[in-house]
Image (tube, rainbow, N blue to C red; front, side, top):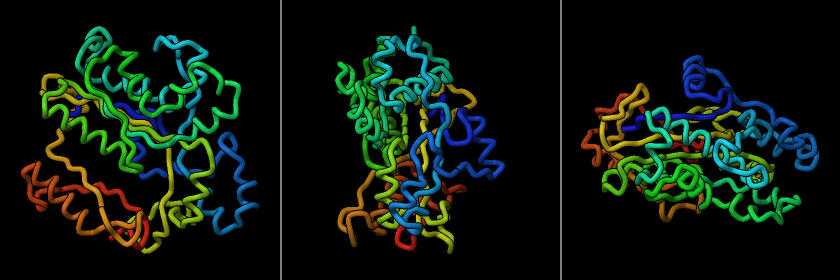
Length: 308
């Protein structure tokens, strides 16, 4: 079961604020703030059609704050660290703390860390600053170090890995964590995912490709669907093999599966049969029939190609 959780999402920096936002149907998307990049410059260069596709997104607030001393990190090292790494330390430890696990319990334990991460904007930004010559630059921008840093700071001896499968990275990491617990490779696992958009390059590329919405909204499974809207997030969940540490955040993973589309119409096009097989495999591992499901939470591209 999942025994502790923590998150930082657009519109709220705590799990409860996110729950309240979902219940109220709040919209956390906004025009790109100047603190990230100047959208007006991109608009003039790209033209209105493409620019509108990267005009709105969901952003985290106060991502620059970090209590380095709490995580035994010097100011110089913290300055050269991808803010995604800093968020992971904070939200990762918070989720473990919510599971009634403290540093004394964790140090030397076989707790595993399984991370979904794909955004690499910080490395490009860092290369244009004096911090690029820092001894901490290589580790600060590394995806493999992102999961390793959590293990290092908390003294964890269990398995750890970083997964980059694009928008499914966090789910893939969660699946790996569940499998590690089932194989008894670790008694406790930390599954986490993070994404920060620090540069406009990906937003522009996706807009040119027509992947993002000109309306700046994800209208998945809707006749208005014309792409999706991007957003930032950091979330973590503490996983356990037993119910001993059950809390108010407890949730049980009955079955999961990871597959790949294989050959399809194009590199980014879905394969309907492969995706059906994935769902059947997950249901089989859970020993459930599809008719037994009462809720479906889906990732939809918000396009005529992806939604089916």
